[in-house]
Image (cartoon, rainbow, N blue to C red; front, side, top):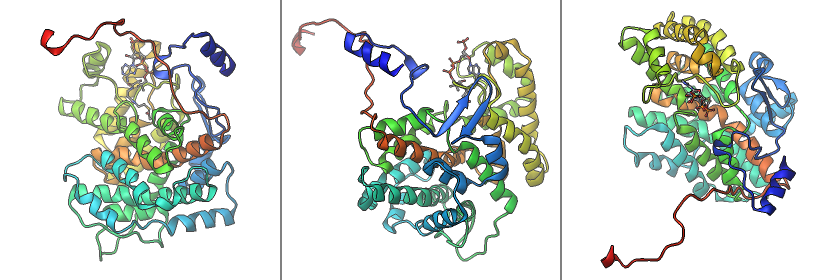
Length: 402
Ligand code: ACO
């Protein structure tokens, strides 16, 4: 395929593939997906095993370095991250510049972009020690930035990280705790969030990861590339879908819970009405991540909230859609976002914040891809071609004659 592409380029032919439905833009050894069989593996390990046995920090190590860590490697990795959670004090002032009701995703992407200005000593993409330091800084500081984006949006004081806590626990404390008040991390909440982060940690060449690779292919530094990925994730057809699902479920509830009527509107392709959390470019079968989440949603929601009316609506929606020809013919199944919003809500996060949680989970995947891209001798600057459809040559007319 790669050779054919090169050959075509020399003959003047261009492959027209809108949305890159069938374009292999990279060779990668990180994540394997079989969309027809519903299989997902990180570095060869089935997602079901990692979800059941691993932790987010261990999965981050696996994605970035290629192997599961030994006990010593994991302890060192955890320790390095813990020692970098603090932000430069001036970065706090940065948060005051945004409107109080700003969406936390552009706040987060701006803050991550600003890391290039605060940590100029680790920007060289070809210096291994620089890349390693930027990697650790991102893994450590993005949760702090994300918690600060939340605190600003609710008008509460910022908390310094507590480095006696693990990554997820620290993030929860900085998000929901108050200065000078003890904060007990609920182990069920931490476990649920850790699981969701594992399930989001990588998904090969999706929109945001491809963005990270494309920006990085110009040799832009890791912070700049990750910031671009966060912006790509913001859109409702990608990471923004987890918020959109909850808005959809709330809307159905507000209209009396008529699931069949909503599905009819989807099938009639009413403008702006899609079954959010359904369908996927690659999965033409049940998304294995959605399967894991669905199995745990009941357990988590009943433990944390004593059940959830919106979960009942979601299940009814799924049941209706999966037995309907419109969805069967198009092979539309629930994707990872269909059930995640319900869990995030039960954990206490506002809807607007859900996509930030996706970004926290996807961070190690983006970093792993950027590092793989920068080390690959086959990498060239990403530069797609186009089919020109504009005007033929014409002569300039002075403004007085137009
Ligand atoms: N609801 C209703 N119809 C749908 C849906 C949906 N959620 N998804 C796809 N379809 C229909 C399309 O209208 C199209 O029908 P047609 O053949 O009659 O024109 C057909 O299924 C194929 O859909 P495409 O839009 O061509 O599929 P594509 O691969 O481009 O899009 C996407 C994939 C963006 C995920 C799409 O399924 C969608 O919009 N889903 C809802 C948003 C969502 O949940 N996004 C999260 C994706 S997962 C992630 O980013 C983590």
